[in-house]
Structures are given as structure tokens and as C-alpha cells.
Length: 345
Picture 1 (cartoon, helix red, strand yellow):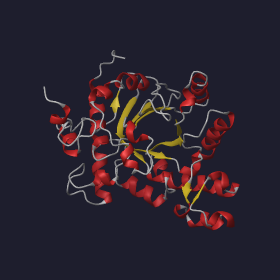
Picture 2 (spheres, one colour):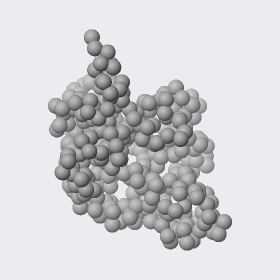
Picture 3 (cartoon, rainbow, N blue to C red):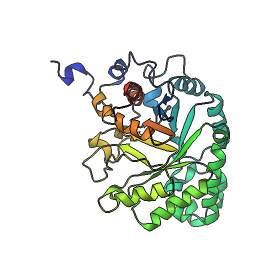
Picture 4 (cartoon, rainbow, N blue to C red):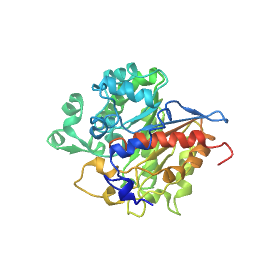
């Protein structure tokens, strides 16, 4: 029997390179193109957490040679999957004109999940990337700082951040193409009353947009807090973002399966690359440079299918956005879900 090194000459089975990755989906070209309807009446959409990463847009990786503009790449992506997550909005507030272009370049039933800006979840942002109206309003002691936190901002500027975000995604909401706003909280966001209040505050500031909550501190799910965490989210009908990521590390969040909203369930796959997950001084893409094998994906298919029976909409997003790894796994996951028999949950 061939070894992994022999079967995957450019690397191990979890990092074989784009060519070997593409080979795995040679017969899955149609998998995941459309939402997967289930008998209970819900639907599952599968996609990736980016369509613009340089390792993905590189020649010969995912896009055909003819798709060499931003417009053509998004049009091609939307012909392959019905869902995508926008990551750029974490770093810079969205502009309505950009959202209009996204809307115009995709089918009417295509869905965008949008990541909340860093300032909206207590994380720092680069001052230079803020809109001029916010930079000009900064107190003098903040203008010279390279990075700032929302806690440093006057209330009126925090209000403006949320207002500009809502305005920026309004074209998608008006077109029925906006999925959820991902509130992804950092590792230092602990399960205390203040944190729960902050989640509700962000939800209220973003209303009427739908939000979903991803928690990246494992203490939310320890023996003391897990039940309370899920009950809090369910009581407020806040979709809980289920995650698959590296385990056995200080920052590891367990792969909890739970549906806390009857409207939406979300699962995000971060890869399982332990050696780079907590590493400093490396490119972000290296943390997610991991190709799931089908057995690893199959661990989740009955859980996703069960979630889809409890929520009207289920979104499955591959955040292992290195080269075509996310797209490969998205197609494989869609095929597994399409083939899963209704009783096998």
C-alpha cells in the first residue's frame, strides 16, 4: 500500500498542494452548486470563507484562466457555490458601493455571510484603515496610535462604526442576499455578565440584521459554563456558530454541536493544523493551511444534517482558505451531505 508521501508527493495528506487537492474533486464538479433541501423543510448551503485570498486566486488553483478580474472571479465562484463569507469587513468597514457590486455580480439567491468589523467585537483595528470621518473625530491622544480598540472611542464614534457597517451592507439586505453578521469574539472574551451584555448590545446595534456568535475562549464550554452559554444564546435566539478546529491547545474550542436559533445554524471549519494555530509571526493563511480528509468531514455530516432539521437555514463554511483547500472540502462536504440518508442521524 502506498504511503501518504507516495500518494501526495508535494506534502502530507492534509497539505498535498493545489494539484493533488483538485484531483480529489475531479468527479464532484456539481457538488454544492445549489442549496441542499432536506425533508423537514430546511436547507443547507455550503461555501468557503473567502473567494479572494491570493493563494486561491493564483493561476491554475481554483479559477479558470479567463477569470482574471474581481468581477469575473466572483461570478465564477457564485456559479460553484450558493454561499460565501466576507472576511474583509473585519479589517475595514464595508462600503455600500462594494456591496452593490457584489449583489450585481451574483445570482439573486446567492448568500453573503459578513464578518463583523474588529471594533464591533472588542478587538483592535489599524487606525489608518478607519474611514476619514471617524479618524477625524478621534480624540487627540488616539490619532497617533497605530491600533485602537472600541473601548477607547467616544460613544458617538462607536455608534458611527455600527451605523456605517449597517449602511455598508444595506444593498445586500435589501436584495435578500445577506445571511448573517458573524460576531467572532476573541480569546480574551470570557464568560462573564459583561460579555453577555456586550453580545446583546452588538445585536441591538445591528438590528434588524441577523447576527451569529462565535466564541473563541474554551471556558464558555467547560463543565461550569457550557449549559449556561447555550441557554443564553437560545433564550435570545442567537445562532451559535459551531466550529471545527485544532484540539489539545490552550486556545482550543471544543467542537460543540448545538442549535440555538430556529432560523439559522452555522458550522465553520478552521482546519486542524496544530503546529501553526498559536504561532506568532507567520502569515495568517498558514494557520488555515489544512486539507481535511473525507473521514474527518464525515464526522460532521450527521451533526450538520441534525442541525438542519432544527433550523430553517444551515450554513457550512470552510475557513481553511489556503489555495483550493476550502473549495475542495466544500465540494466534498456537500457531496457527503447530499448522499446522507435521512435516517442516518
